[in-house]
Length: 86
Image (cartoon, rainbow, N blue to C red):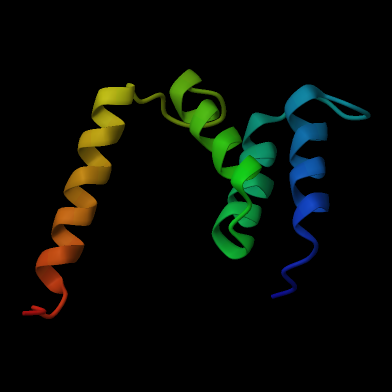
């Protein structure tokens, strides 16, 4: 799969998020932000996804507390699955 240019991915996500030259489409914006954040580790894309999650735009809305609990549980499980380092 072609990864692309991170700034362009975020910009395309912005166009869909704000409706610049297209209809507002939060789902498509989230797809582009997610690609930039997961594949290219773009901080702006990560922030945009977090904001969209918090506001329930294009995805299920989650509270900040439940998000922290989910992340904490995720890292806890990952730690349990990793080999012990003494």
